[in-house]
Length: 627
Image (cartoon, rainbow, N blue to C red; front, side, top):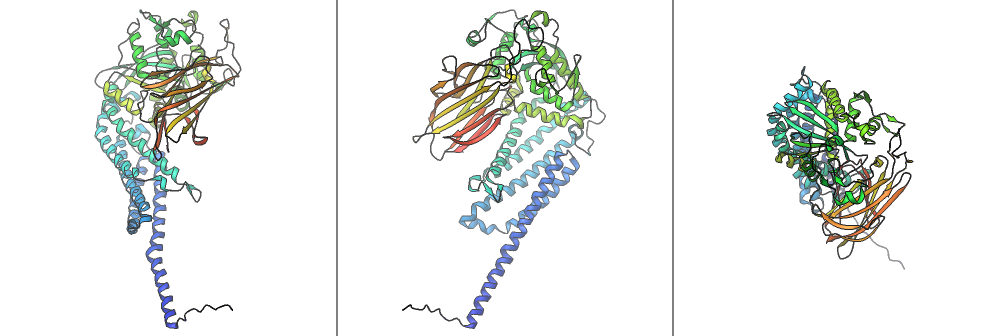
């Protein structure tokens, strides 16, 4: 017989007390938790909306409105901070403590960030019209382009103390953000990216802080480099990236520019072959040229950039340049490639120079921008009867670009030109080698000097050299896949797969041709793969010569050679072991260094078959993950 469960009887009075306690409990919860939480969420939303409005206004280059938005965003953030402080008891609850502290760090970082923005706005105010900010009339109204530059140079020293304050504030922002741990947050929450956004934000703060701190020494010497005290003379080398060489391209032409208190004077511009003909000393060709560049037995200025490290290549260039009849005293060397010219035309529009209207319109002759086609016509077929007609087209074109930039309203072009310049520097389409040691160190810290970096952890730099005497790199597509295998004992074995493909049919590249260009031709590629020093080669395939392991620049590199024909492809696969082990729980760090003159090869990074990251390598990049 089933036994009935009897519940204790509750008196009416007790029942009323229980109901009352429930009402009080939920009432207090509603008043003390729910309402403050609701108020806090509304406050956070208002602050975020105001911050987004601030970013939008700043992008519109409206300085007065930007200053107003900084103030209103600060007010909104202060209210959020006050509403958030109500929940300070959460820091004593173990499960919630870390999330509370993370939020506190982000709010404090926001406070410092807005203070930093205010410092920046105040520093930029004197240069408002130069930078294209609306509503302000600074020091540049009614001045010519050269007078504007002169004013900038003469007042740059006033920015140095501000940069120190700016950098100090950014370090405070970074210190707060560094204490936030993205790994304790989910990948997504209600369809919104959380962890990846936090990681991107931390990376952005790191980059900006590093840029400002590292730029300060350069800003201090910039007036001198721009000719404030005495004229400065720079040799500008044009590297043709369509015929890729270790530092960005085959050296096609050169120009001498003099900077003198805001004035930029193009003193000379010539074909590199003309300069090479004046070199009085014969330099024997090094092994790679003898081995891979047909019928060349001497080392010339045009082939001096054999080292992937731009500093060392320019040291070699200057050693040869000492014996050139056309030698000029210079204060440094700047290298640019075709991407710089294309981007400048994107901003400024068509540029008339040398009897040609240079544009970025794609032409049928090469399925490429017209400016590239004209430059390749200039660079192609370097024989004597043509060379006498080949004046300094690069210098003339660059001079025409400068005249266009300086001869218009600053607000029209200069902000975009500054952005274009910074992007070209970070992507290594402009590289500096300076005689001033402090300026050179600053350029190296900023990543603007084309140096091969010393790093702890894993490293990869793929360096291609076109030894064909043709412009085959215009069409060749690159894909890079690197798979990382971490064994139980911590050993790291890596497999690198490189694929090269030319989808274009061949051009007529015979010596007898009278029209057309030799652009789509067989690529004769000398390949060097730089990895951590002490790495061991395990397997290699795809090279037409035996792959060798050598040492250079504090790295081990694996050297091979192969050809890529028009409408053809080639694959190079290499397997190697790193010289160190990793431990479980460690952060794996891999630095990928981009070769100058490349637009952005397709990269895939995998760990034991699982995709970690996929991207175009447009700048040097770090890949990190937990072991």
